[in-house]
Length: 90
Image 1 (cartoon, rainbow, N blue to C red):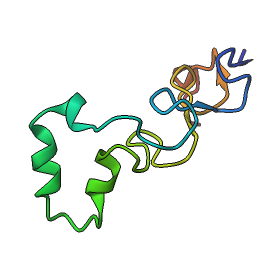
Image 2 (cartoon, helix red, strand yellow):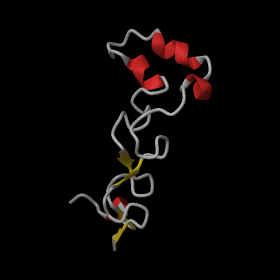
Image 3 (cartoon, one colour):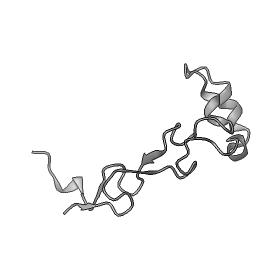
């Protein structure tokens, strides 16, 4: 039987664990990622201004400037104890 997720209280989202809800990077991501930041800066995948997510003061690289993220405990569903394997799909 599904239960309300105790981590997010059934909401499906939690305060971002990186920026703590501010929506802003408090440190340069290259301090975390090292040289791999250069790969992102040089990426020509069509993502404009992707480097802004990597600098101090830019939008948080985890929540992208939104103060909340999907709950990791319930994967954003708001419920736990629900097993899709118990349903055959009939």
